[in-house]
Length: 124
Image (tube, rainbow, N blue to C red; front, side):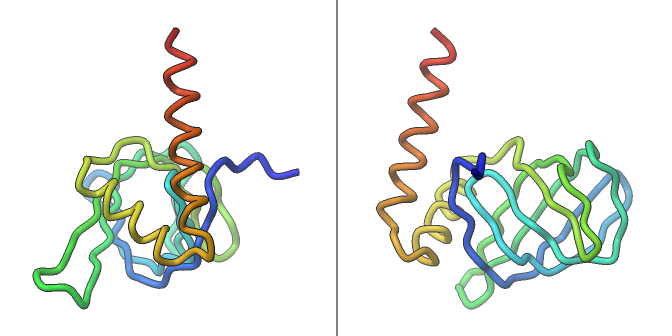
């Protein structure tokens, strides 16, 4: 049984990863409201903190979606990240990307609502 709380969608775009002074790009394979998988030959270590920027081309002006993340998985063909921090504008763009690329956009809203409810319940 999967422990994922958010649906993943295939989404093909380039992402830029920054770790300290080091910067590289890779191809986003899929993403969710809480993370993404990046196809890359670059090596990172589980637990590495990174800054992630995805530029959505085809819009004017181009839209940059930015996250602070952490490496949570290393695979032969890439790296999995969990998003740790995201500003409100980037969050809204991410929500729209997921909603437009999933078969059931209503499911995305239910997942977000459930996650918010769980966070509020945990603070009580």
